[in-house]
Image (cartoon, rainbow, N blue to C red; front, side, top):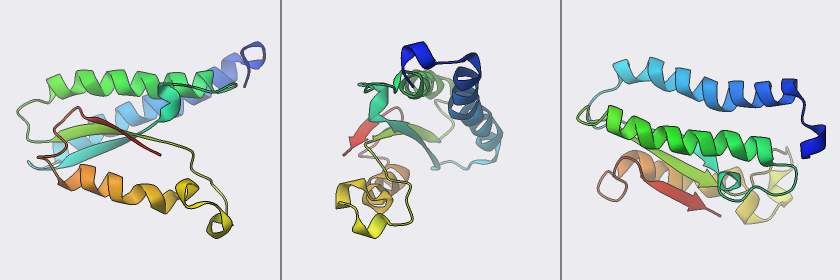
Length: 131
């Protein structure tokens, strides 16, 4: 949505779901997580370089990136890692099989799985980008 078309409702819905929703979910999950657990937050390359019409969406993902960096210091010593993976475009279509491999949701799965399980390669607070 371009700057001149952004409404308060659009802004509020984006920040409520992408920032507030993630924040509350992390708050609720942390007390139940065991040492060695990992939280992987889905970011977006739009947090670094939003394209035309993606300023609000990119802003929500940039907010998450900054918040996760702060949370890392707050949960230090808990044994739980938290990271952000900034994905490129992912098509939300029933016809994904006909799309280029880089746009398939399954293309990002190995990166996210590695973030969850490999604490030596991905210490808490790591940011990774996946094409």
